[in-house]
Amino acid sequence: MNTRTGASYFNKILVPLDGSPLAEEALPLAAQIVRSSKAELRLLRVVPPSSCVPIYPVTLTDITEPMREAAFTSARSYMEQAVARAHIDMLNVQTDVLIGGAASTIVDYALQQGVDLIVMRSHGETGLTRWIMGSTAQQLVRHSPVPVLVVNRPHNQPLSFQHTPRILVALDGSSMAEEAITPAALLSAALAQSNHGALHLTRIIQRLLPYGRQTKEQMERINKEYQIEAEDYLKVIKQRIETGPLMSLQLKITTSVVAYVDIEDVTRRILEESACIGDVPGFTGCDIIAMTTHGRHGFQHLLLGSFTEEVLDAAQRPLLVVHARKPQEAEHKKAQRQTIDVPIIF
Image (cartoon, rainbow, N blue to C red; front, side, top):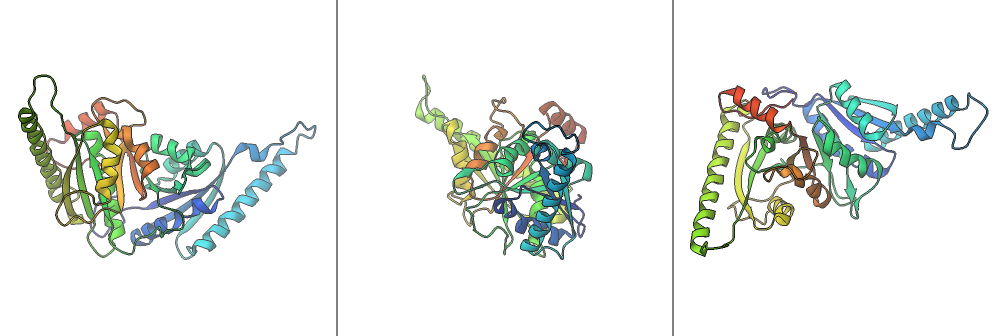
């Protein structure tokens, strides 16, 4: 992947399939990215080891191999049918079948094959489902070093865009959260096709309430200072995008500051902003949300990575998840740059 004008932003897109119609609903959006990027589409079916061994004791030692071959044959047949159903046979598609644990096999395959983006379906109308749309999606969100675009949308609604989608990037002021900017920018540019991509940068801040001897006026002054600081921060980030390595993408960039009072409201405020319940003039909402995750909860500061899985489960729109580096590594990279630019994580 690169940021050069006219070049392919994504070279290899991976869609994991589990044999269900729900998993196949990720294919239209993946195909749209593949077409605009002239990329290669990889479809992976992971066969659980339990499908290749008898479920009861047997004396014949050669029974495992026929079961293994039958499982592979069935999986390959399914993949051919999935390609036909999605009408993507004219694309550069490669299908693979592997045996193993779902999440670990998908991650290993993505790294070995040089995949730039994993696109997968997560849930329908009733929350996270099992296997690839449930626990595996959650594990990939937590641990995949390759960005994961999770397709969240009510079942049977269109899952590709007929317009230039706008991507909301949720930021908390940390360098880790900023790591979602570059993948989001490249995805926006790829989906924009002949138009310019669009990003909406949202800075999440806490609104403090009066406590102790603090008066309401004093707290309002502090909150106003936080607001101004957040707005200045967004101006710097916007400048990085417009003058740094991503400059050639010529993205349309809007910004907003979103305040929460209770920590439990962070997820709700992100979702509201993406749905255009904010107060930014001319802001018409976003089609995709982009966030980083650090794969664990309770991290210092706010660090939105702690809320990524909550957004994943609640969102009714696709979520781009980028696994952040360790904070000391990110800060070291930031110090090495010397000049203002956007982190490049690929």
